[in-house]
Length: 159
Image (cartoon, one colour):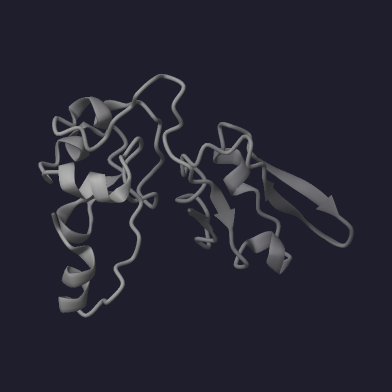
């Protein structure tokens, strides 16, 4: 088993940053134990958002694109570090979050994130004297990341 805290210490990072694993990843400890870093999931991802992260383990990079939840990464994972138990199982608990740098919060009209959200989880609440502010409906948001890359000021993250 890889001791992430020890490895992080020797790299000058006592606390390794939490990386977003591919959809249907097992809990972090189990994932690290099972993942062989073969990169089969990276090759299988049609949107190419899976990249080699810290230690060569797969992580998600939404600056490249979105997750379609196609399941190709799970199907290609031979050591079963990614495991989808049934069709109803959620891919992950992550949701989009909009930061303070968001253009409408600065008084600038922008609705780009809403245009890219297929789930229609982002709506724009009108307000007096300013641009409508984006609001994310946590019930509708799938955490797919489609809204992240198009944001002109990188104000959106998935966490």
